[in-house]
Each structure stands twice: as structure tokens, then as C-alpha cells.
Length: 345
Ligand code: SAH
Image (cartoon, rainbow, N blue to C red):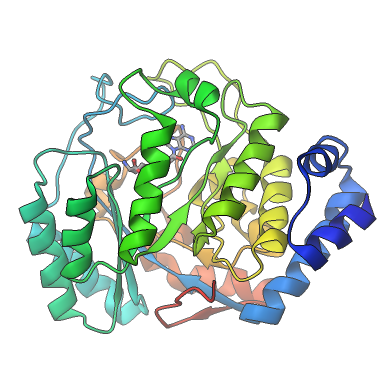
């Protein structure tokens, strides 16, 4: 098994069968070995620097009905909100002096935010903060819309593929959504010139090892600049409320495998990872991750952007808790980098 890890490190690829063997037969000892190899690669390319991104969750309205997601259209139990352009700019104004040089605008697929409105928001941020990168995470759009956002200054786009398998995708989403469409969006984004982030949930309902293997092969083929993965966590007001959450252990294992497969990729230690274990985010860094995305949304709306139960949004997970985050990272030998943190991949 250690030979497989060495092979992955040296060739940055494995066969389907080898991926399956590695994931199925992992042990705690093997994981520790994998994490230390992943840290070597992480340190080789990025040193002990961890990049920060300020996450602005600007709308929780969504036209989609994904079975796992707490802000799905059919959830009538949440308080819906939208931030104005002024609210969003205020988030940036708070984030900039804290050291944020990337602002991530994430939201549900909200028709209120027409292309015109997104263009206006992106242009305003760009003219106020020319030295900052803007990341959009607003779901599936047409090639033309993506292009228009890019042309006014959007630098990066996050769109997790969620799961590569069309069959598995169909078990997580209503029939109006297709795995192929989502993947096409990612190819479009790359073609336009965005730095692209994709990813998947670990331990989502009905997920098999085969699905994870296909996710790895898809990541290899797409070769994105960033990969966001985190454990599935049930939300009480969704059809998946009774499914178990994904495990910390498997999420860390997958993070480390991704670090070896795409050595220069940006790899966030996600909020979901921090939610399922008190030191989850630090453990993600120790498994090869090198990005954290503290919450810059206004305090009064954070509780309404609940993608899953108990999502953390205070203390070191909040932008204003950056000092605490620094201390936590120092404890494990890492430091925050105040820079755009563009991908080397
Ligand atoms: N509407 C945007 C943003 C989605 S929210 C888009 O379509 O990309 C960002 C990510 O949160 C999703 O891609 C999904 O992978 C994750 N997520 C949603 N619900 C979750 C849950 N219950 N547990 C864990 N992660 C979840």
C-alpha cells in the first residue's frame, strides 16, 4: 500500500483499480504515512503558508432543490435574505484591513441577481480593490454569462461537480439538474480563462468507493486550480435529514490523495470539515490543505446561510476571528499569507 502512495507521488496518477485498493484498504497507519507525504508536497510548493479567502454569502434564495442542501427552494423554514451591493462592498471594506485579498461571492441560484447586477457588483469591487481577486460561486450559467463576468474582472469561479457519476448525481438532485451540464460549465469556465475550483462531498448519500474513484479521475482530467471537498452533513429540513454525515477520517484521506495527485493545487480545509470536528480545519491543513475561507458575511445573516446543520460561523471561522485563526495555525507550524494566493497549478 505504501508503494501505491509512492507511485501516486511520483507519477501523479493511478489506475482505477489502484485507486479503489488504496481507498478501500486504508488503515490509520497508512493514513499517517499518506498525510506526511502530502505535507512534504504541500511544503515544497507552498511552504508553511496558508491562504485566506473572505467568503461573502450574498443570497440564500435558490431556484434549485438539491436534496442535500439547506437553502433548497422547498425549504420553507428559513428566513431568506439578499445583500445589496452596498452591503457587499461593506464586507470588502471590513475584510481588506484584516488581510483579505480574495473575496468570494457565494450564493444560491437567485434570479434576482441578473447578469447585469452581477456585472455591476463585480466591477464595483474590482474598481475599489484592484489588487484583490474576485471569486464567484453562483452556480450554473451560460458560457456568455460566465464570459461577461470574467470580462469585468471576475478572476476565479468555484463550482463543485458534486459527484462525477451521472447515476449518483441523479440520486442527489432533482431531474432538472444533470451531471453533464455541471461538468460542461467547468470546461466552459476553464476555456474562458477563469482559475477554476471544483470538488465533491465526501460521504454523501449513496456514494460508493467507485464514485470516489471517478471523482479522482475527473479531477485529474479537468486539472483545476482549486479543489474543495468536505464531508456531507445532513440538514434537518431536507430529504436527506436521516442520512449519516461523512467521516472526518475519509475526508482527510481524500484531501491528502488530492494533494499528491495535483501537487500544486489550492486545497481548502473547508467549513464543513471544521464543523464535524473541533480541530477539523487544522487536521485538514495537516493532511495537505493550504487554504481557509473565513466568513465575511454580515453577522445577522450568517445563521440563515445554513447549508447543513450546525455550520460554524463564529470564532476562528469568522473573518473577525482572524487573530484566533493565526494562533491556531501557528500551533501547527503554519502562517497566514496576506496575498492574492493565486494557484501554481
Ligand atoms: N449555488 C452555488 C453554491 C452552492 S453551496 C453552486 O451551485 O455552486 C457550496 C457547496 O456546499 C455545494 O457545492 C455543496 O458541495 C456544499 N453543500 C451543500 N449542502 C451541503 C451539505 N448538506 N453538507 C455538506 N456540504 C454541502
